[in-house]
Figure (tube, rainbow, N blue to C red):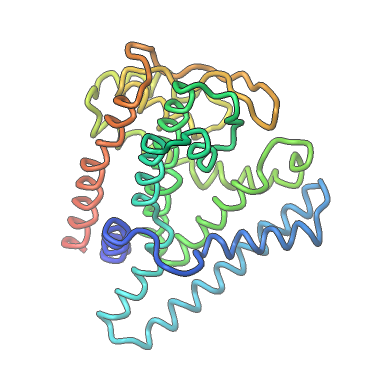
Length: 298
């Protein structure tokens, strides 16, 4: 277990945020784009080759970086690995990005950077709802899942997880172009996020202003979405705030019918979004406390 590494990487992300230079996820995206241009065919085999070639390449590079870091003194080795690992954690960026939706003079444009749904016809309430769902779902994808794989497998674990997540965000859409090409990427992302999504939901319950309501909503509505994972943190957040999330939305010009998660006790507005973002402090304390305790005991 890599408690010290995970703790230091999380603290670096909180204090520094995004490091200068080209982010590793952008390099992964460049590879995916190159492969798609050269070898795309809407069949499962080319998609599977894309997935496993990117995972192999990511694994080899991350293992090489681990071995290279051993050239440094032991204390410096940990710092170097933590800096590298921090690029896979997105608590700072996620919180900042959702906050910017509230502060932006063009909130539709701000939310369009965070969601895959169509934003042109969104109402103000739709924008705030999308911001809440992004905050809840990406606490799993951008924070808890990367930390879990870093904790279990070190730098290669978080690097390979980010590759899986990047593949899912780029080629796993259920559109005509990606229906077969992205199937392996989508399946692998579902598997990789199965445990982290549920851990994230339980953490939201732990720090929720309405813990019992959050827990009830989690068990009642967590499994309602088509995704086997996304509904759990979103349902926990809906119950925590007393709002209804989910529901119909447009994707790629098509209306997609989705179930509602939670009960609308309060209307969704900027104050509700700020209330959800304020949960970050308790989440940080919980994560740091757990990793710090683990560091002391191992």
